[in-house]
Amino acid sequence: MIGTSLRQKQQPPPLDVVTPISESESEFSFTIARVAVAQICQSVGFKGAQSSALEALTDITTRYLEAIAKLGAAASNSNRRTQSNLPDIIVALEDLASVQGFPGSSDLRSHSLWASAVIKDLMKLVNWRHVPSWLPPVPVVEEKDKEAEGKKGEVKWECWEEREEEKWECGRETVERECNNENFQVSGKRGKVRFRMGVALDNQVARVGNLRVKGGAAAGIGKRVW
Amino acid sequence: MNGQPSQQQPKDGRHDDDAALTEFLASLMDYTPTIPDELVEHYLAKSGFQCPDVRLQCKARQSAVIKDKRDKQQKDKRLILTMEDLSKALREYGVNVKHQEYFADSPSAGLDAASREE
Image (cartoon, rainbow over all chains, first blue to last red):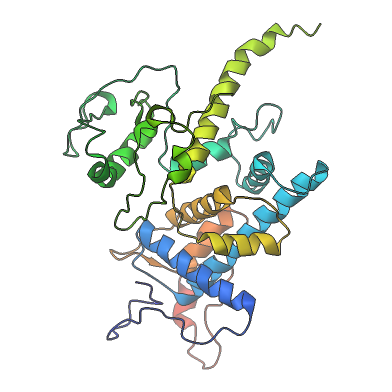
């Protein structure tokens, strides 16, 4: 699972590299963070890592989290609040992203924070697509094979509601493909028809979505009335 | 008084963004980021951040790490995270990571490293 450097020919790679007892609380959390970072590496496609590189990346991870926290707290404190809320976080993320730059950073916060490119990037990363509510649901039929990209990258579904669970796994590849294709707009009300209550997938444990059920019935999940 | 007819048009766009963000946040409840919540809470508490829920941070953190990794170059078939690639990718983000190339404990140390550009 995690290994320091898989180039070495060792016999059974230890499940958990970290055997020494952590001496302090910060070491303990650092160790856990290293595990998480290694898992993220693996999910992106890395097969191994130099231990120094992994340590450096973990260090950056913890510092980044702390930076988000500090900036978010500072943003809320600047507005006479002690509890941070979502705009504070967005402001913090924009500050952090301003080093590398993102579209819209020239007139920062002169218009809506919700339209910030930082958030849009996050949404893209989660493979989440928003369908405006005024679009009618388009029933489309999906094909299983990957080379059937069709016209303008339009992917088709079939019986989306019934085969939810297995579609979720193979839907990942198609979703990634679609997200790369910017022309793709209409997709049907995919985000709202999801029934993931109590379903545990193999490698992605879904949270029991009880919290979402009480927001609305089957038709209205995720849709709030302002 | 404040008629502001010019605000009508961007208001629709903003409402759409707002709705998009709302739904996105609702959908975040299902998404389990790799970084555990407790870990994120620990680091946030350490920095004085108070918030009832922390979903967006884990996601932001994970996305930053992923973006960073995607910048790595692909040297051979098996992708291994190395310090050189890491430092090159981090330089774009303004983080300067310098890794010592060799330890000068013998006269021949570092001769190979000096020949390649770092």
